Image 1 (tube, rainbow, N blue to C red):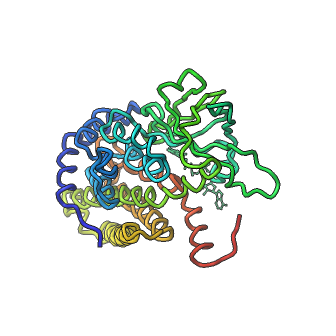
Image 2 (image 1 turned 30 degrees about the vertical axis):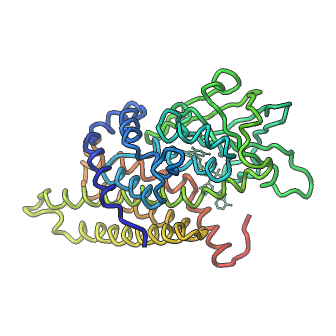
Length: 383
Ligand SMILES: Cc1cc2nc3c(=O)[nH]c(=O)nc-3n(C[C@H](O)[C@H](O)[C@H](O)COP(=O)(O)OP(=O)(O)OC[C@H]3O[C@@H](n4cnc5c(N)ncnc54)[C@H](O)[C@@H]3O)c2cc1C
């Protein structure tokens, strides 16, 4: 079984005490980026947990990353502003050249280089990644990039972007997942020189954007791995991403259940605590049971991942169950708080909005169900 990392959890929880509900509430209101929180996490080295020691990171396994992210959410915070710094570098680490790793990973580890942006989703192709339209055409020692990405989160707070673009036009007989390549875009040079970023205001505070590429020149030496194999490289990081997001959802569910239970004990109506009513107890008990079951699936996915297996089914199920558990806990917490569930100062409505995201991103519930139907149950492919 993966370790619990109690020491890490305690240290992260202590750091999060400096960033209470009022901090997140203010940012939420202004849709502002949690710069101070991200700086504190970076300074403490938590975002470099998964980078090997040889490149300046802590070289910890994925379960340590999961523990860090879970604790942030368990404290009522949100790691969505920076979790990509922890795992997006995996594409570079697994598939980048020695020279690229030496050039970028130490800076990513010490936080002087932010690799927070991940450009895959496009407005027209959506979930159908192979149908993406952004192109990168070779021109001497550069690629020239044209197209658009959407939901490129944290682009305004990142120095680098992992970009998936089509380098070989789709021809007859070619699988649409072929001919895609991964480029590491240095956004410090690119913004204003072919790269434009436009923020999108969303239901929760997520610093997401759309980005436009207009003849952006990217040095060919920034191609990661082999040309045309990019889809595979992106896919290879998905298990880790799903497991880590699932850990965040578990943290959210725990925080919501704790808040609701303590409110249910304190709030008296009809001369007794509302938590004495089974109508209040049962939704919380159910949410708790579902959270614990989801947590076990997260641990199982971590166990298999760390044993070197490819736990596609478990990573997907962990994400599905944990996202559902967080949603269920949010629903029960709002109901338990009655009118105060809607008041900003209780933070419940904020978490209600934040947990809703994980039914859609980074992969929607339908697509997970479709994966399980086809790859685990052996049902015919539906699309
Ligand atoms: C806040 C936020 C942050 C994000 N951050 C990033 C990021 O940093 N980088 C990035 O690349 N992307 C990011 N995304 C994009 C996210 O991964 C996509 O929104 C998600 O994968 C769904 O794609 P879509 O929005 O295009 O929906 P669509 O593909 O248009 O799907 C719409 C709905 O139809 C359903 N659907 C589609 N096809 C099928 C099918 N065959 N069977 C059943 N149901 C189907 C989907 O499940 C979904 O519910 C982010 C999204 C959000 C909202």
